[in-house]
Length: 140
Image 1: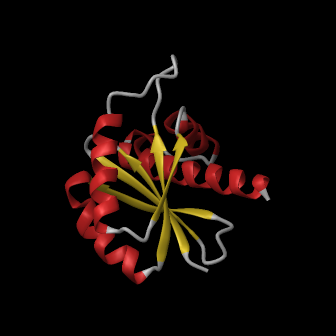
Image 2: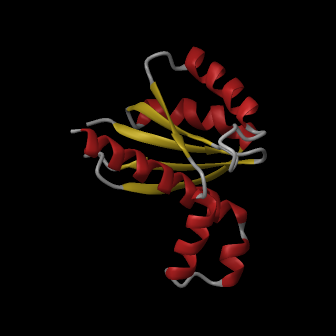
């Protein structure tokens, strides 16, 4: 079964997570600088048979799109033209960074690890993907 990739798109960094081969568990892949995203995706999508991607949809408390949404839409445009066979899903990513931080605290992560934004970004991507998998299961 092909894997599903999750992208937590940020202004500087991108958090990444991926499912296992059975699409049951989401695991963090890492965090990369935004300007290195397409070179990474070129290799990763091909070598890991990724046919679906989940991209976080950030919203404000009012329900309106966050300021970064414009950048995300531009990214999606480019993504669709580069990878026309990869299905894109959007999922609300509200509070995923806070949930990620709380998960790190619960897991006993050291304070210096919790201060590294890249750690929070990759866990947020994992939460986005796990939420997507749960929604997918609930639809069945």
